[in-house]
Amino acid sequence: MAIFSVYVVNKAGGLIYQYDNYVPRAEAEKTFSFPLDLVLKVHDEKVVVSFGQRDGIRGIKFIVLADPRQSGIDGLLRKIYEIYSDFALKNPFYSLEMPIRCELFDQNLKSSLEIAEKAGTFGPGS
Image 1 (tube, rainbow, N blue to C red):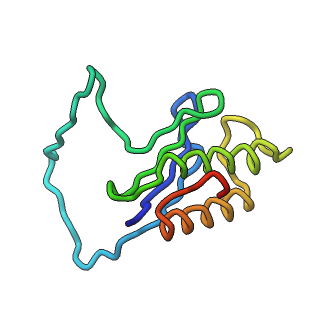
Image 2: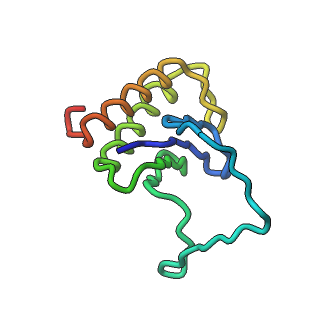
């Protein structure tokens, strides 16, 4: 299983953090012709645009793109929320709605993603 990316979006819709965890090696260059044939699914009159989204602090959204077979995404989102509140919000140099530039946030997020990929789940004591 794999966790591909983690995004944090502020309440205005701006991307304040992006981490690409899994970058597959491209063996051949791929080209696309335009326009692209995209299919969007409508569910309850809403367009489904992301997998593993959690509304957080004051409208901050945490988005995880992962393999559909990856288990424990809800626990991982709770852990990312906890890391954000511990290492970004408690940082005296961080301003809300601004990009997250915190070494401890990066380190803890990476270790949490590694644990989630190896174990597959996040328990209450993680």
